[in-house]
Image: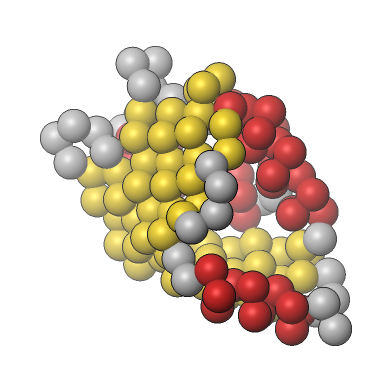
Amino acid sequence: MTNTEKVERFIAAWEARDVDAMVELVSDDLFYHNIPMDPILGKEGLKQFAAPFLSNTAEVKWDLHHIAENDSGIVLTERTDHFRMKTGKTVSIKVMGVFEFDANGLIYKWRDYFDLAEFQTQMKDSAS
């Protein structure tokens, strides 16, 4: 399986809201950074971040606009992430993602770049 296919599987796990499937694809020492937020470390950190967030969602859809893998196996994604909250409102953010893999083929570095203010505004609006 290529690293691109692994990222596509990771995205599918998010869309399925399946935290266990996500965790299977990352290393124990994962470094996940939603820039400009604080980094999340390790499998347990990913669980602690994703599970509560996903428990408030009714549906997750990541529209993958572009995906590219370089000779080093780093995968870049340009996407729009949509989260339909249980309130019925949808939060959509444009994201540029970078995924790096360890020697075992697991994601060990993941960085997402997005507009935090746009996300926070939409999250605030989705609460009503």
